[in-house]
Image (cartoon, rainbow, N blue to C red):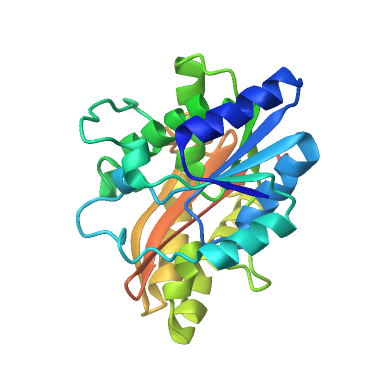
Length: 285
């Protein structure tokens, strides 16, 4: 497995692959890999002749007071896991390699970043869309892989690729959970044992909502109130948002008549966690 740190070197390698007619899959990450990341890598390995994993803690998607400096990093561990997953290249540029001192161009969507995580993290999705556009331009993959756990991010990137005519197939991979239901996240390492146990209320509330819809509940506000009652019963968890949105557009819905995304963000102690579930009222995934 190669470890590449510069854009010219990455582009030269991609050019050689292209000359040989090889397909390329890209898995954009910020590192500190867990089973969710590995699921993306394994899917990319199945579908492409060459697999690139970008490992870049992107400063432009962190706001003031967020955990950019504290974000977990472990190169040796990540390198071992990526190699075991069959990755061909880890692209690990420095911040100055991606953003020189004169950098001034950003990709900014108008509607999809509004609300949900975008409300609490202004500028976050501008940073995400910008860095992913840059990665697409550098690696030029046929396919790129993203987790369904980051539901708003996934939709932002899909829309961006369509709007900017970027010829990449965005592949969504289901959320990977611990055995007890907690969605895997690099930030789970911040949790104390008590906070981690308390955080289980988030996935429990989503599974509860799914069961409610399956038994006939269609009123969004009523369903949200039931979920909030469950979550607020856990004193170590504070809810940031809980929303029921149309799955494709992320627009609010009052009656669940089509596939919806139920998304939430909360803090367990000081750690911000997100989770979601997609539900079709007709029972189709």
